[in-house]
Length: 286
Figure 1 (cartoon, rainbow, N blue to C red):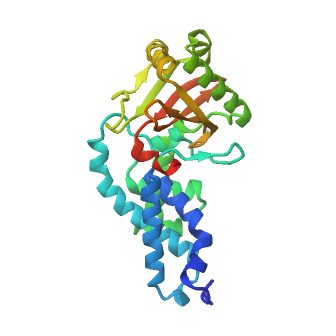
Figure 2: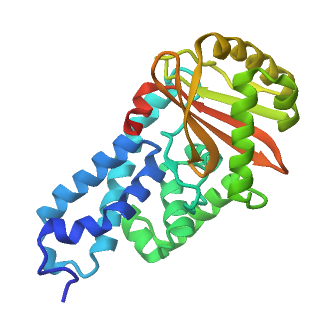
Figure 3: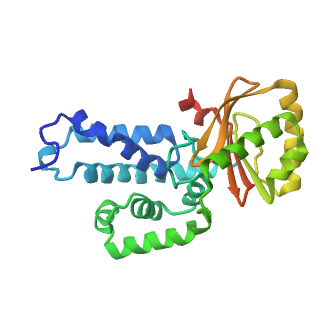
């Protein structure tokens, strides 16, 4: 007998919605697009003869993944013409949240083909067997194993070498906020690695660097200029937390818009600074 066959569509779908959203968001990097895909899957679920579905979660996961693959085909062109660095929508989590899919890993996933991304995410991150993956992407199991292996090799460097203790990460993020907003360049410089990089996503709608800023000297120059603006116009801390698995914070800037800052930290030094300023990608924070 199919699981949930006596439930109405919403009763059988809603318990699975958070997990389906996680799959869709990891595939797409967009909160709004993930929500649209999952809603589309629900509409399709309503039209299915649910008594014939033996495993609703597997069925819906396949549906969501296929919809995401279709979405990625159309998203490729928009990413190619995107103004400045593209960053995934920020998802702000509590310090207690466990998530191994950090922002650098999500950026590494962007460099994969859609099929490689699907195979890697489903198998390595969601524990889905290759039999189901093969049925999902319409490839044989051997091909899916190869897709996942290629993806694994590409994203290996984006995975942290060691797990940063969350509270320590938030302490560094708090110190970074204080130093960057107060203009304490000595304290700020002591936190940054020599090869630190700064990535800011304004989407062409708010001021942001159109290329990543690379190296300690260049990043310090940018923050020295920003500190003057913060001192003149202000920057209000909204909350600390994990942003796409990295320690960081949400602020409200002088223009009234939200901004998120996520910090990649290795060996106690900040190696990556990821700033989201695109208002389209911050709407869900409201």
